[in-house]
Image 1 (cartoon, rainbow, N blue to C red):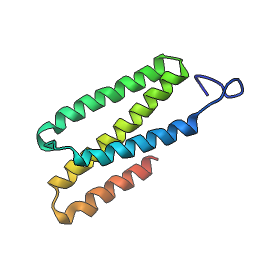
Image 2 (cartoon, rainbow, N blue to C red):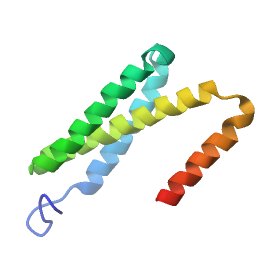
Image 3 (cartoon, one colour):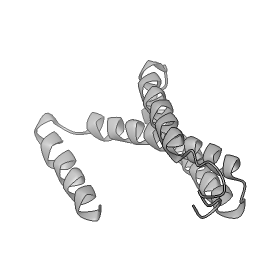
Image 4 (cartoon, rainbow, N blue to C red):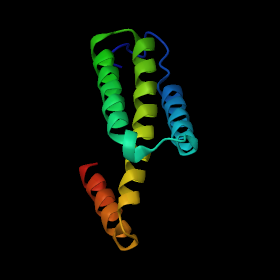
Length: 115
């Protein structure tokens, strides 16, 4: 609505949201099949993917082309879902079995409070 008002043109927000969710889920699924040592390359991946997400947000703010904004949003969401999957795996890999519920329960509770 900020970039292009809906009475003037078609807005594809629902389609973009669906596409970004599907691509993010596919990326999160495929990351499990990559033969990557996340304990070795995890920090670098976190840095690179975070920078990519920052560039996507920056592009969405500066450029007023709706298609560039849609593309940046899809890339941002897919990268976010991939990154969250890798980070959650790394956290779970370093925990003992008794602390899973505590760590992920507190994390979910904090996310719900913020939401």
